[in-house]
Length: 396
Figure 1 (cartoon, rainbow, N blue to C red):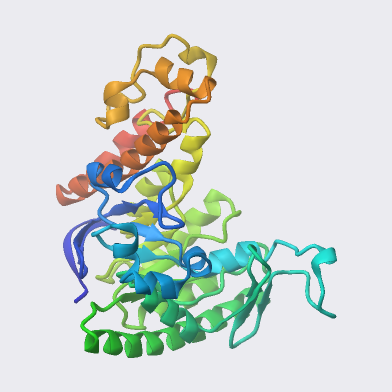
Figure 2: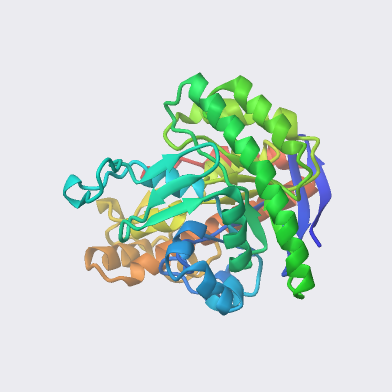
C-alpha cells in the first residue's frame, strides 16, 4: 500500500507522490512536528488551512506519556489527536542521544554502581532512565517496532544510534555497524507486525531505515550503500549529529546524494528546518523535511521571510505599517503589520506566539510547494538562484 511515483527530475531535484494509507503526499514537503501530539500554539485546523500534508509525532515522548498502549486503546495517533492525514513517528535515537547527556543528580542515586548518565548502550539493546521519574526502560529493535505498531503511524523509523558529533572514526564505525544490524532486526519485526496488522484489518506501516554517520565520508558511503539495499519503502538520513558546521553538512549530503540519486523512493532528511536548508537539500535528491525550529524561533520573536530572517522586536519596526513578507499570502502577512506584531511581543500577549509559529510553518510548507512547481517546470536552478538573489537582503 506504499509506493512512490517519480513525477519529474531536474538535475538532482525531484518531485513525486508518495502514496500512503491515509493520503497521497506530494513531494518535496515540509512536515510540522507534533512533539507530544500537538504543534505548540497551532491547531489541527491551522494545519489544514496551510495545507500541511503530513505531520511528525515524537515516539519517545508518546511512549512515556500517555503511553503506546493508551494510544492504541484510542485506535492510534490519528484518532487520539484527531488528525486524518499521514503521520510519521520519528527516530528514537535523537532523544536517547540528547537525554544521555543529562546527568542524574548523585543525591538521587539509590542503587550501588548506577551510572550517572541516563543512557547505556549494548549491541543488543539500549537502557535508559526516564527524564520524568528516573524509571528504567529497555529497548531492542523488536520492542521499538512493537511500540511503533501500537501508535499506528503511517511511516515509522528503524531503531538506530546517532553517534555524538565528536566521535572517533573507530567509535563511529562501531555505531554504524550496530545501526545496520538494528535496521535488519527492525525490518524483520516490522514485517511480522504488518502481517499481524493486516490479519486484524489494520493498515500497514512503512518503515524507513536511517543513514548515518557523522562527518566521515567513507562511513557515509558505506552506510548509504547498506541502507539503500534493504528494500524498504523509503530512506531517512541524519543530516549530521546536530552541532557540526554547515559546510560539513553540504559535503556529506553531496556524497550521499551521489549514491542515492538513482533511487526512486522518498528520501527524508531529519531535523532540517531553515528556508535555505530546504532549498539546498531539495537540490540534493531529498523529498521530506521536519524540524521544531519554525515554531521554536517563532515563539522567540523571529520570523522567516523571502528577504531573510526578521527579528520582530527590533526598534526599526516600531510604527512600521509594512507586512511581514509581501511575497507571502498567509493570514499573518495578509492581516497584520510589523508594528502590531512587535506590539504583541512587547506586551507579552501570547497571540504573537501563535501568529509567528503559524507564519513560519506556512512559509516552509509553501516554499516546498513552490520548489515542486519549479522542478516540474524544469526551472529549479532558476528558482534556487532567485531565492538567494532576494534572501538575506533584509537586516534582521
